Length: 227
Image: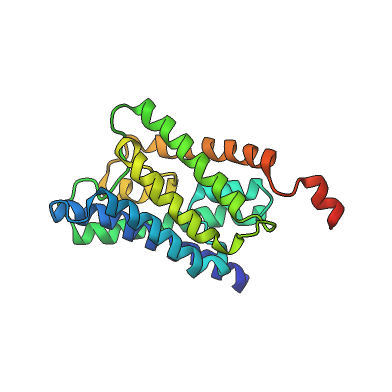
């Protein structure tokens, strides 16, 4: 095994672990503290942990933390195809490990921060598609190598995660991330609606990649002529 590849996969495990531990941990602690963190605080926690992990592990693995993002970056030719499956496996391992540790501490919490639809499955599904579309579009455009403010991409991406959690969370849980949903679903046994969070985000990513190709800063033909 290539040491560089092992470092990338380990970074994805650790980054996704921190995301799920902090984000779903905030949900659990909010329940146990009778709302001390609040919905706004939970949303901010998700945004801040994504922001922190991008700058912590970004130089190592790109800090995807999300199987849907990994797929989108591969479709956009920003990563090698051989890394896609190991990245997704690593992200799922990190998410499940975080949820199992939270379960060991909060044994009587019913859902462990699982993403659950509110107000109907179809509504939650559509929300997840469009929330992921917006997130992936921001990731692709803000991290474009020709973007003048590319250095601030981590801040922008974290802010979008927090924003979407703020307004989408009460409807769909604002997962946008199959691994984030998988961890608490497996640890709590609340797997009945998991299919939403393992289908809708990928549809959102497909739409975002297509949209990005329409508005990208440097069209493919110009990239080739300048290379």
